[in-house]
Length: 433
Image (cartoon, rainbow, N blue to C red):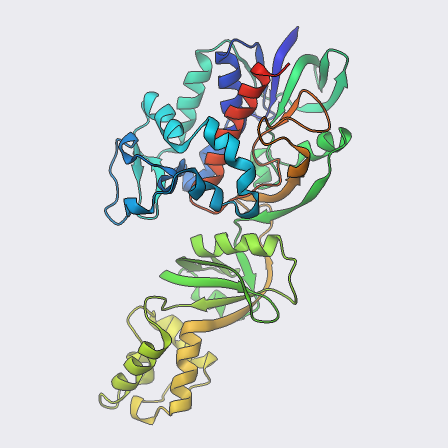
């Protein structure tokens, strides 16, 4: 049988592409190498699935669940907010977001019975905190179409032929007039994303930007860090700096110490700079553990507290600094642990302030693709038409999702990109000649 559209990969982008193409009257086959669809959806957000981000909304009323009062609706900026989260690649997403906006994405899930909620940082989750509800909603809608979902169907090769494409599978061949490649990148290879699409794209003349792990925990060259494993700093300002001390990327969010190094939302976000490192010298982290107070105010506070009896220096640090971390900051500032406030010299006080407001740690690596949430790198965006997502090298071939050289910040942005690109690719497939 000759299908109108073959969608490769039943993840976020692939499911949306298959749904939209089938609802537009096209015959669709959706091929997934795993035994079930949407494995990465189920794993995402700690199995809660961060659908998208409310900063991309212009109307919060599409959310039917609770909205955290700490989220400021004035931060909502529409599509440009989503694009900004993708850095230089954000402009490429413009047509996709116009095709399927954040509002339309939320409404899509709400119509399938998935109530949504907004957390303080703008992250939109299903109100049930269950990723399986998100996947079930997509599969229900897909099930109402004529699209054929084939699982445990590994594609071994894709070849252009006169009438379209031939897809080789272990059990035979499939013919399709058009192909949407939505196979993901290399992050979380346990979910089936092992970079299969790169070789297929190369066979059609595409260049691949070197895939690297992003939104990934970072290893640091400080022997004491593992001793603090399990310790969370709820509010920290993390920056990746180059050899000249210039900031490359910063994020203010929570930080978690682990046995291997550092993780948490702030670390995952700045890891994108490490993935695409093209700067002078080796990357380092600069951590401000007290971003809510400036350096001068902190120094005055330390000076005043030091005069309050013969308290140990550790006890005069702000409450936002956990004691276990305070010990390490004193070591970094070369202050003896038994030093008392009245004995703290001006130079020691300044060093302690610098350690609390700008501790620097060398970056020695990341946990790699095994623990990365997304892939940085992929099919060169210059070789894909952003208005249709069709290849500029091979007519009838479309790309959507993480297989492209496009990665966004943590917070639901990457899922939004996937929903929207899958939708646009399908729309283009259904209208292009």
